[in-house]
Image 1 (cartoon, one colour):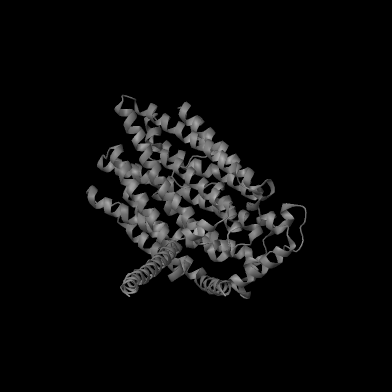
Image 2: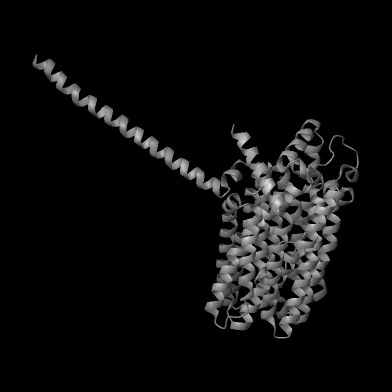
Length: 503
């Protein structure tokens, strides 16, 4: 009996730990699930879930963008100063920046209209090759006209941002790859490169320059090492471009009758029947030529031409504002006014670029709550007001606050705006239409840069930033007036589409 009781007394303690282990395990499981749920919700709110689930081609395009813009950051800090060290005057530097952008106009005009015929992948590879060649020319030559030719024909951005055809082509490919209700997420991370990678590029470029000069290298020789690094990045981009598949091409989807019919239905559901002429394009047949397929702006119908016309009126205002206060001009302004050394200058704009990247990521959540157009309007107004005060501070500390605030606010609107424009343009005409818009933007950007040069020569540097602020405010007002109703309709239809997919 004692044994039985002994066994009973032994079994009772065994049962209790078993129940305790089960309860503890369930608690851990619930905690893990809650953690996973919160983590998933957070990553989804900043678009990383969409990036993770995106096709491999979309990820390769993002990688190319980060690599290329990193290279732009490498040379942005030194480009104007490098040209000045070669004995080129401030007026010639301003002309250099302006002619580079205007010269790229013809490259954009040609390549964006022929990109769908030649193939987006081939154009991107060509861009990588020209980027490599430009880096080598800047590293080996000091002749003004040779450098100008390399900047125009090749890929060198005077403003540390992209205004050439390759950004346009990549954005068009991303719109082709991603569903409409997820298209804001990818452009946000795509545009993050313009700030995160530029930040790293600025820091690395400044560090290389400081290290070489510390080892008794002269400034020009140190800059040429940076340009060799720029060329090396171009080689890496060649490899990434070569890995893209044919899925980035519009004809890959338009040649499939079933998908073409469904695509028309999706486009109709995106913006409603009233906006169908803006989005739909005839894909019932597959004519042999790219022009007949609608891969050119010459095939736009009346409604599509009207939308393109409105965009070409408003977008130059923003482009001119960017040209007036681009990163090289900002760095040059800070350097000449407060005599800030290159190492500290690199750290300042590294921080500003990091804040820009943060603003771009936050734009996903803001666009979901406020809508694309309201996000654009609010942040553009705030940016414009900040720029009005950019040239006024008399101390470096106050100016730093203005620089960081402007850097955080300005990029927030870019992804929502691009998502709206991508929805408005017909898929088979998107590359050509975006290319035409880029041409207009490049002219305005170059004009803004040239105006800053004129004002700087007349000791009116501060006025360039004030004009940029006024243009930003005017741009936001025009976009809000023209596309607010369309944006609300698109947002409503996207929510309906997402609800249907969830069911």
